[in-house]
Image 1 (cartoon, helix red, strand yellow):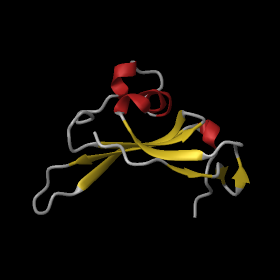
Image 2 (cartoon, rainbow, N blue to C red):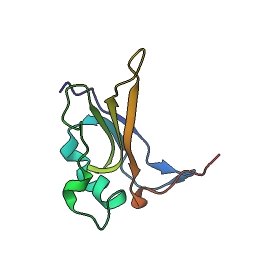
Image 3 (cartoon, rainbow, N blue to C red):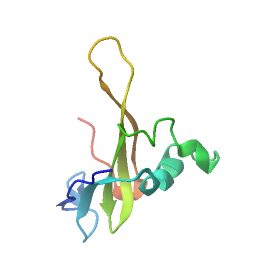
Amino acid sequence: MDHARPTAWPAVAGGRKVADAPVVFATVAVAAILDLRHRVLRAGRPFESARFEGDDADTTRHYAALLEGEAVACLTLMAAAWKGPPPAGGRGRHTSQSAGSVPKT
């Protein structure tokens, strides 16, 4: 997997600073986000339930917002079968409660 150069941003959520360290946005391996997926999306279920069909496909990409090396938000993009031009499908969009929340608009 080709990893893009990480990008860092101030750790701000809802207009307030949530950490002294910057949030780093990076392309990651699925292993880097499985714990977050399990805690947020699959709590109370077996850990393996956080693994999605297609996670290891060559066309799948996993992204994470990392705060002090820990994934606090993630996004998985997968190719999807479709009639017509192939779209991308997003799964596994999660944010840790410790990262704060952004007000809905």
